[in-house]
Image (cartoon, rainbow, N blue to C red):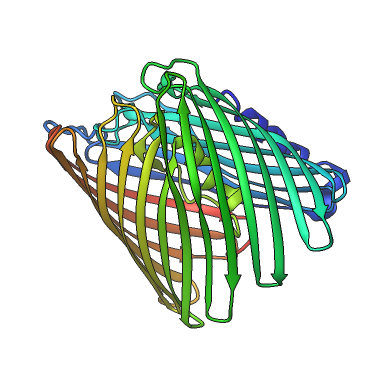
Length: 433
């Protein structure tokens, strides 16, 4: 949690009287008791425990002419019966932009604190978790080219740190130049050139390198369709003289056949790494931030090496007055550029369902299944998760809920495990949902 304190300072700064007129905070406080029939996810002699839990989640936003910011986070405390140390786990995603000179100069800070696995092949037990933090900060210079082109030059310092996995720790510097033309309120075209120099504290499992990207970005939104596409080229130059290059393609497209449903397609073919993914998926890239429902462990362990990623996702969602559902199949291929990391082929599907019995009772259910093939190891891992929650709203602010979660993992590398978790809790929200 070395650099995440900066994000906490950002949140505190937003509460000063100078910006209070555009300040908003939403939070939830909850406490409950959990029964876990296999706390350590052991294949034999599972340890069943009662766990006392309490947590707080929040979203802080500031929308003003001088400061624009959003900070979303959650912290959970768990008290175990025996054998596992009590402690606090947290997640935090923060973004702040300070306008120093209107329409000319600003300074941006982004901080992403996550909980990820230590060993990518082991099950999600309390002993296989670590806090991972990615901090990015730097100035933005705005300029115009003629009457129709808007330009932006960026400089960034990026620090990455993992609580246990030291090979992830790095210092990075980057720069980017972006030029865009807006055709109308719903469409624009831009050209982007960016460069990053990655220097690892330990370059044993991942090598120092420079990365350059050049790509065009086009976005268009219509009544029933919307899409954004990046097309370009990337190159990685390693300190040992090796070079990797290839096309860059990112497509996000959506179609709304009705006002309550949407079909979305995502295609990705690019170079990336864990730090890039963390920054892209943070609050800075979201349309609207929400309070995290829990402190969740990322499905994969933090790996320092850059990789070539190919991914396709299709999502079909419906949101009605009472009924809502979502189906999302996906497939991904990861090819790591450092030889020590085994490549992955991933296929999976996510399902979600919710139903409102009335104004104050809601049933939510979800399920996910994923198969990972480690191509160089000739091994396969199947993971299945499912859960259901029944929530009762007693007042505008107070509610209670009970949930059940099932976890199963079948692995060629380790023993098969399964887990059942029941959780009963009360919560208070300062603003009704």
